[in-house]
Length: 361
Image 1 (tube, rainbow, N blue to C red):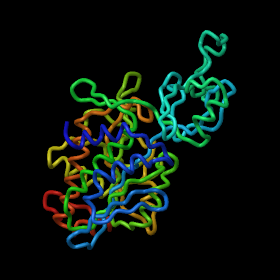
Image 2: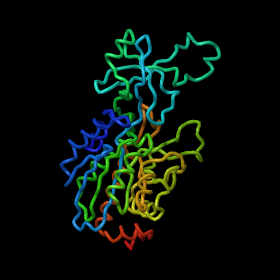
Image 3: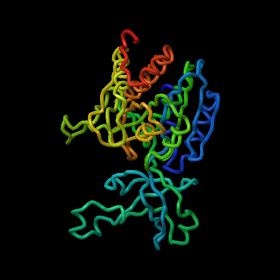
Image 4: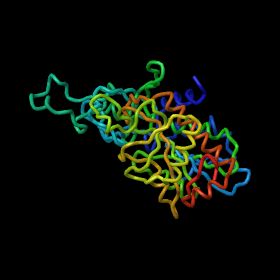
């Protein structure tokens, strides 16, 4: 296992529901903070690690969000169960029977609903609704549950990192701990430009942290490193695939939050192809990520997203290919090295110009 994969394993086993990213932030600071010239946590909770460039003429922003989808505790049932609401987009059909950890003490619990043998005929025809679910922590009554858990505490999926077959990984929070692991690697390099490595918060509930981080950094170019949807599964027609697992990192052209800078996407794609790195385009326009807020910061920022395809995203059992993770890592390294070797390219890309990758002009 490479160091980057080891970091990914450790990152996915941490809990960091949107609004409660402390555990993830502490881990990244402890492992990578020493690689930066400056480190700060802003008012939203974004961790911004700054590496001073040799020339300092341009600013490059890398962004990956620390938060994951999960739940917030909203009340109690008389029999000792916990009421909850989702934090971020979660398919409620997958929830019954899933294990969770509740609060900072990581109290184990199970998401429950009315047992099928107690349901009437009509109830059996429908999927359980979230409003009828609860978290069972083994408390006997409301008073005992209140002693263990406070309203407003968060609950995260309980799911260990595991390897599947020769190439795949199963874990929770691949969206976007894949990006966090790759950003930690980027801090090892030295560059001509100033590099701002931003580990953002609250992406899953409205891209909130990245808006503040981008306003503060005011970058010339921003790259968002993400885990994105992968739909190459039975029951989905090929023309509806978003990405294909094993096809390499995915570049986004447009989604519901952002329109990536076409010249920047073209540059990244041709760089990857020229280096023999597998790369693909995301073929749907659904979803969104931090690029949506970064693009509209201040006077506007040229953005591009480089993503790892992940099946079953926003669940406790997301699946990715290690080859795709390596592709995303290699492309990120390649882009940063190329722009550092010739910083004038940053100005041209910022102004909308296209780069001939072969000639470097």
